[in-house]
Length: 295
Image (cartoon, rainbow, N blue to C red; front, side, top):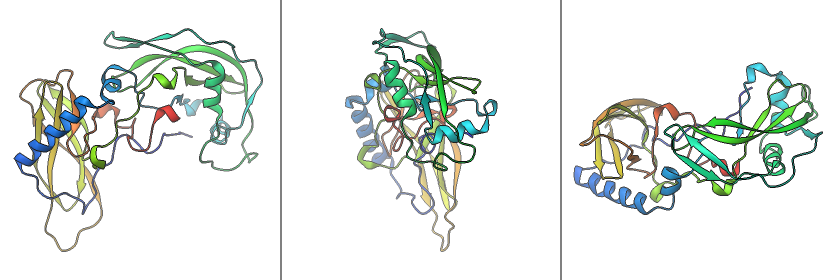
């Protein structure tokens, strides 16, 4: 069994029949300028580019193919039973480490707080316990560890609390960073609907954008507005004038050329104003519904 945090990454794209009216080059420039200026002054900017915004649930997934089948159902039903003493006291701060060498000192949760996050009841369950194939998750040991998790700044090494469960060959791992030190997902500007979902750097000044549109839409090109801190992107999609159209959507990609190499600049969607993630992270994050600080 495989558990996923609310939906999938960042995919608030328009479906067939919701394509916006044509946007002129001047209109796009005005909107892109607004988006770039808003991001520059947004309180969500600093955590996204300089802090820690995790892109997955704080309870790390097990390798489900390696554990007994009852474990997944028991976890969904929060069938926890603590059979060991939790380490007491407040741990010392820890340093997060990114692949580019950057670091960040953060407070670490006590084991009891991490266990509370691990064991809290889920908002959904396959069946109520005790159910056939569901049994207690007997926690028999707790240790400190480390793991690599995805973040808005790329993969980062973080401290964990590792909970050994009797009969399970690998521990349940909970990110030990205090949620107060985490940033949350940026919210859409003006409640806008995200149109471009992800990007990929094909060359220093070439981006390939991934976007969704209806099967009765036509794509007329992609545009980019650049500042020293951000690149705002847009795909010009227009609904065809047809009498009948199904409600199916499709995903396409399109390239856009920048004036300067992307470098460390953030890529923003012009419609929603939210920062985009590289395509490799497409499965990791969904802005509207998932906030790892509450997980």
